[in-house]
Length: 531
Image (spheres, one colour):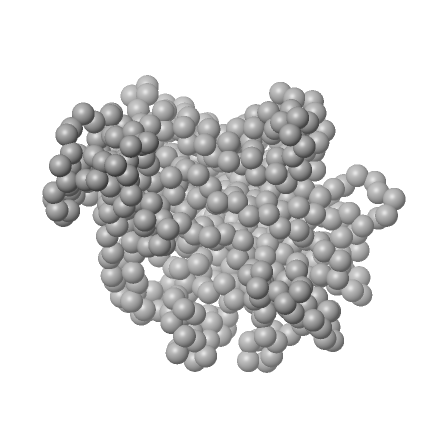
């Protein structure tokens, strides 16, 4: 039998066995109300004709009010792991191959409106263990964010209808992704409360306030987690990527650390939608999805365009600016190459969607290497920070950050001190393979792995745009599926088959497994509509 690949473990941790494997019943959690098969009623123009407040409740015995407003999934699901990650009895437990159940809920501006055209959303989410031994992914969904705020009455009112959607992909343990899912809402609330006063004095816009709050929330979450990693007997050496999207009114703000990705897609009846002066111009990063039978989908409108755009820039050590930042800190980047033979063995060739994707991989993309990065059997290149981490920005990973390591008093002979005059010099961890670098002094300047997110802001629900959705997923999906394929599948499920976002998200995760993904798969799918 083919053995399932293990999660990447740094060399210095490979002989350690101090983490307990969580064991539980693989039956599905109790579902109080199931909307998996709910078909959303639509009008002739494709928009939803109503906004039913129907919620899939999947959190077992928790208080009903908290269930209605917040959902944590994956390794942070309280119905699987009881208690907080900070509890001594729970902090070192793992989530094994527990059967994943999708989650779904409606949200957005539910207040009465005279114009009757408020933007609403429907979200579906799932986190699958896949072929891994344990799931280190988590996700967070908060509807009516302001309703959860307790410290500031103005914050409670101003951000009442905001939706929060987040994915955390952990590595070297699940503690960082669990902690982020638990604490990001609190740090975001504190930052937004502080930002209210700042907006009054500096005339910040709402989106500027959200951008500032996200940056602070990421920094505070990272700082508090890294400080906790070595207190009260803990010895956590893990980290997590983070992808957080905020939606309020018609504003979308997305912040990212690591290699999760997000894409927004919509359609328009304007024939010049992709012209140079258009908001959705290719010059602005938008791509057109060509209609036709060969692609397996059609837009059910005359003169309609379908367009999509990446809303995330991933943080790989191989990205030129990230590599330069790491090298400036006296670090280095290694490159590993591997042929993805294991993916070929795991393909489900009886799945029609799998076959459609494979046909595109080996036909129209064969001569375009930039669009053939997920083909089974491809040569895979993985960059690692100092031979260890495959992401250059993350929460946690305290061994790679200056503030959580001892300063160094060594005298340097092999580095250019002039370019590091403004940076604190710190001693690197002993486990790094310094011997691979000529005359390395085992000291660094600044962070090798950064916790500073990159943030993008967009408008959703624009006039003339229909069939609009946002897809967020960890690398377990993107390792085996090109963005345009994911867009085609998601669009077909939502607007041709009229599946709920909950059911469509589950199908995308299932498809990633059948395409041979070797990682955990977490998907959040948000459909926007007006009523």
